[in-house]
Length: 516
Image (cartoon, rainbow, N blue to C red; front, top):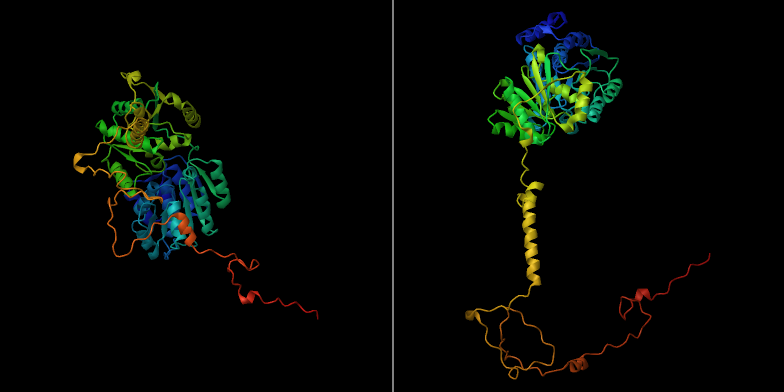
């Protein structure tokens, strides 16, 4: 075991570490800190929960202790894939930099740009950011990366999964080529290997454990269900929670929508649970995570946004409600328990449709989890009810929202079609509003000319005007005879569009070109 005092850290940094209660360094810390203090690039590969955050935070603080921050030009840059992980790095930097005049800023989404810009204008030594928000500030002209002396990329394989590799390549190109780079990842897929070869300068490769291995302190279990029905899975989850002495636990789901459903189901059955995923606003995510850290929340239902890098020291249980699509995610999920030498329990619910994903997990970890059986549950009788508004609801004639409205409109259309096909009975006018009987045909003889149909709102009889003499009745031939006749055009060769009058300038002869 290596003591922190043997790694070459300054007395101020050692005092801050001692305040946290740590005296012995983990393997990744013992190997990476001396190399980073020497100014060399580091490629660190270690499983989650081994202390990678302190492995780059402590040497970063020591190397920046001498120097001065400049406005909009950070001296060190730390890139993290998620807001929660970036916030955790910021908390570690604040904790370990006590007693030293170093400033830092956290650039993550879901927070006001104005507050972040004010910190950048004052100048910061360390900038901790997610890739998207960092590039947003750069494109606004609020940030320059030409003064970066040390760059840290944390959880690089998670960057790959989230599609941030193009952003990371762009950020590397915006920073000076002569800088120290500390690159940490739990796995090394080919894309990450290509990135390290392109941007790292002869790095020291440090492997604290075989990539994608699970900690020996974690007991892994699986529960096989005969059905993939969601209600059966929720029943199995509650049985597992009630089976063990769960101090606190994280329930992982593959989809964000499933996270909300599982959290609501647990709360409905009297369990203290809350969801956390990427669709929630940042303030809600931070409050939920802080309540879980403090022990005010027992169960945290999460998507993979919380699977990587979150340092919650004492998590007793991890439940995989869904078998992850990527085997690497399983390693990171269960790595939330069994941290810092503590023991932990990991459970995975497996249904018949999860066979392929399960095979990938077993092949990657190289371990066969212990299979446990939940007694006293009749799985055949458990069946989830179709959700309202779905296909089942429409088949029953119910449902809500858009489907129900469409059904009402369809029924209304059929009623209208039926009414148009059937003969309508004659309409009877009420006696009070009966119109006066029409005059006999002899009394109101129609005019020889074509008569117009009167408007419905027009009066029945218009009074005749007496201020002008009556016009004699004229027929159409008589009116045609009175119209002036149009004489035929005499000038057939005139310019069209001007009638019979041709402008004088158009009648001038065209001069011929002289032959000189």
